[in-house]
Image (cartoon, rainbow, N blue to C red):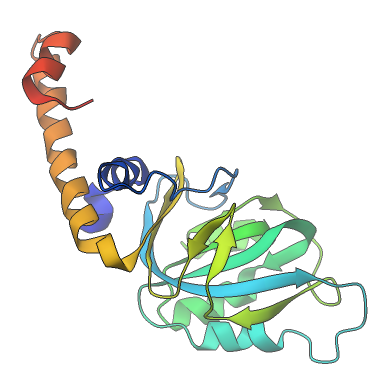
Amino acid sequence: MMRQVLSVPLLCDALDAAGFPRQSPRLPILPVTLPEVTLIGRCRTTLWADMAHVDARPYELELQAVDSCEPDDVLICAASGSCRSGIWGELLTTASKNRGCVGVIVDGHVRDISRMRQMGFPVFARGANPYDSRDRQRVIDVNVRVELDGIGFCPGDLVAADEDGVVVVPQAVERDVVRAAWIKAHAENRVRDAIRGGMSAVQAFDTFGVL
């Protein structure tokens, strides 16, 4: 039900009202597989770094991160927007989905897009890159606080992504923010119905106080 009602803009509005005006990265992290889907889940984080040497233990920590996924996790790949390779693809999707992961948000690039789309797996990223990550990029830490555009994503935080962007809700205010977003969603429904029924935009705002 939450995924059907809530959206990134609604959560951003609720965060604004709660005094958290900067919880959505100002980055072009967009849906590359399922644009109509709203992804909502819990952050499981990976921190990535570029490299230019032979990796003695390729894929080590990224595989551990995938295998540690739990139901409703969203993997956050903090790669500083690097375009050196496609750090996420079909096989990692298969493994993480089997563990209950519901999607991935990549501050970087991905590959195997058509196959991930066929699997019905929500992937948000900066773009596509056909190259493998081996000897180009690697995970250097997992389940730590990471940043996307200076915004902290902590393990266990509520995260949402859709066509409008990405937003993270700190655990300390999650209950109040989700409740406020839910209330605003229903208020917007009333405004929409009123305008469709002939009420002017000014009258609707004066009546409901919602825009």
